[in-house]
Length: 455
Length: 69
Ligand SMILES: Cc1cc2nc3c(=O)[nH]c(=O)nc-3n(C[C@H](O)[C@H](O)[C@H](O)COP(=O)(O)OP(=O)(O)OC[C@H]3O[C@@H](n4cnc5c(N)ncnc54)[C@H](O)[C@@H]3O)c2cc1C
Ligand code: SF4
Image 1 (cartoon, each protein chain N blue to C red):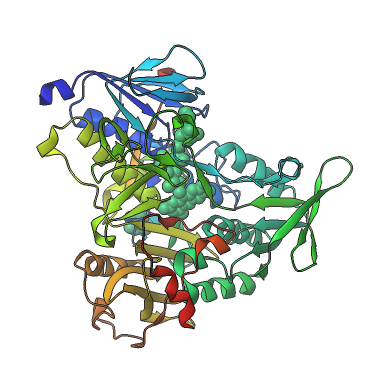
Image 2: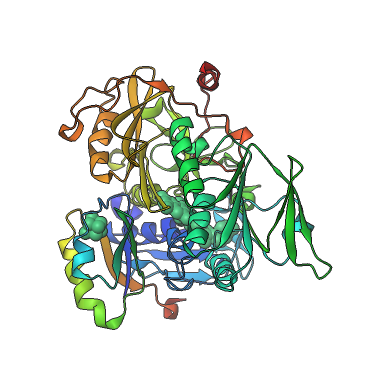
């Protein structure tokens, strides 16, 4: 049986981080059959995190972030080709260009795209950008290099904050408009959001929270010149970056009969897709940003993660399971991890900070801009975030993996606890934010929203 | 040659920064930024940095070549 699984035809849709890592792993695991990778971008797989960092800082060219391969996956790359549908009975992927592609096993790794500005006419104004692809980054970096008078960033999530940070580092005036109470609040909760707001302002960002952008304006020639805010004020700027979070690329699966929707494609812990009846398929697998999967450390909530590390880990598990018989299959149990660098700070997170009711600063302090914050839910540790203290993260990861009691005992990395009084974690309902949280709990947890009320 | 650093693993030990400062640099105290496309005169230094990284976070390889399309 194992031999059979190592042969046949595998198709991967999505030629980015998850698709590439899966392709390599399939070969490492002994797959000798035919392998085809379909990707609608015209470029070989490239890395996205540098796009909002090195590329916007002008240190790296937008087309120079190609991902290295560990080994040649000996695949046929169908780049610049879009998958338009999946025929589950005929086991074929329909393509925008050419004949349908038959498969024995399929991996869905179509990731996400930037959520566009809702008004298409305003979105089309020259000078209005989103940031997801290297083409986006190239266009935006060129505009920043040309020295605009002011940049307006809509959304204070990780991407929006990194863009604002890059603009300030380049000496550009920047306004950030966020509907929620502060930047990063959806991902990190109230306390760290205050630190993030202080970093924005300390670096000269004109930060406007609790406001929405109601309209973008162009001049007669269709160039962006400014925006109206819900508080009646107006921002004059010549570049606007819409950083409103991500949309999952699932439209091509509309008729596939899978459990695919705005929150992603649901799959089991072994990366096998569920069909629309909640029955697990055995030939369609999912990995990366487009997936939604149950995690035992978080009460089997279905997690949607927009994390680099998750795309890598899940792609490796999916690939292993695609060529392994049932008893040899592995679960994807990696603890979620994320990093962001902005305003000179290294922010790293482990676990799911939004899965929390309380937080405590376990090491360092907000004033020192160096700290480890631990998140708890119903008396156990569920997440930790470090700011310029990356070396401590491993310790907290261990606490999460062992479901250690919250608040944690003193002794992390032999430093005393900075504070013993936990405070509410203050993670608001994502519906009230401009930025999407990069982790979404998409299952049911009826009492979670109560935390906000505890002020 | 292309590199990617698994920054979920990276702990900011900065060995790579000492070994190949033209490719790796710290932004602030411990946020690592690097040049994904390694200049030819830095290949050897980058290989040394990858070998020296205590958490083996630096992945070195070639890009998927356009010829495979
Ligand atoms: C600007 C930016 C900064 C980031 N910074 C960080 C960071 O600091 N830390 C971190 O942990 N993560 C970060 N991320 C997130 C990280 O890049 C993603 O988690 C990762 O790219 C996910 O990989 P993926 O392969 O699942 O999806 P994607 O990278 O989204 O790739 C999906 C691919 O599939 C293609 N595709 C979609 N639909 C189709 C179709 N129908 N047919 C064919 N192809 C299709 C897409 O065009 C795309 O090429 C950042 C992302 C961005 C955009
Ligand atoms: S040597 Fe490794 S851990 Fe240290 S900064 Fe470089 S990549 Fe990170």
